[in-house]
Image 1 (cartoon, rainbow, N blue to C red):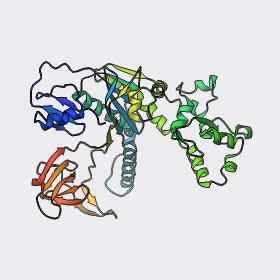
Image 2 (image 1 turned 180 degrees about the vertical axis):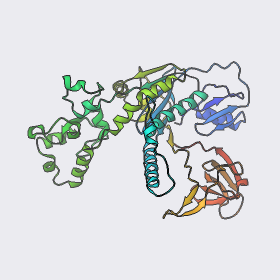
Image 3 (image 1 turned 30 degrees about the horizontal axis):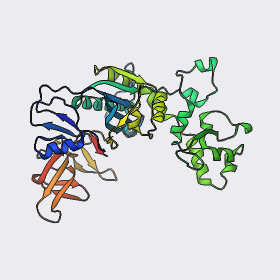
Image 4 (image 1 turned 180 degrees about the horizontal axis):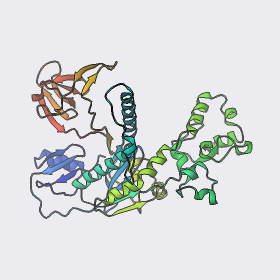
Length: 424
């Protein structure tokens, strides 16, 4: 079932979200119209001054790549959910490319530019742009949800990844005191790292055991780079064999395991770097913010027998006695960014071929708008839905199941471009 639909009165005051069937009935009877497509919001044609919307709890499961959202009402019912995919890696790649271009430009014999890196300092609490993007994007969506729903409190998962204990579980005493964090379970990290499947046979939905890739009896260590997860039959069959001996007939699996075992703790570092910045940002909204641990989230999800997804993890954050899932189709949100500021377009060889204007809006449309095109005649006659790419002349490119040019007089905006892509 789809998410519940947010509802506003004609003065844009928040009402209780309604069931999708109720929303369709209101629209068919002409008592409401679509105010926004993503997330879906209806606006009534009348004023509701005595409305008393029920309080909702917004739960958040922050992740390095995907963040889950869930709205839970007072009856412990999940009525709305979403998964937000971040673009941190794209930002990091863009900054690296920009640094390389600027470095090359300084080395060329162009006008003299004074060195400035000696006078630049970073503010206290500075976070890299690719990481701060996650905090700001989550803040944006928290404010959007609070604008259209009666959110009275926020619950977020405050995970602590002990990278030192992950790398070396046997560390203790004075040696550990040289580290910074404490209290993350190595088993949970290994399950995430290996996709909750047996590393040797790929079995899913079965109890997994921690397995040493190089056996301890032959000098293998307890470092996380030497650990994996395996089902009981594979763990028993491997025994004290070297991984090269056990997988001699499966070279592809062997290469994959050896490569994946050396994967860096990037996701753990991302969450460590942003957890307190996100917590303080959410507190600045003025709503009461509480936290829950990762172990508590996993316990709730296991106890309620729910599958492992980001939005269900969000619903299980904090204290949960019971949950009733009224939605099974979360809104999928993907951050795409604001585009770029490059004014001179180039071909694949780097030679300039066009110039971009500063103007973004043409004939009331801009690139990225989601529109409905009602083409009366011609090869592409019919009703089409898709995103457009605008031009200075009245001939826009519409990207739908097919790509073709269309006049703006045949277009009607469904959803304005807001730097996100949506899906279900």
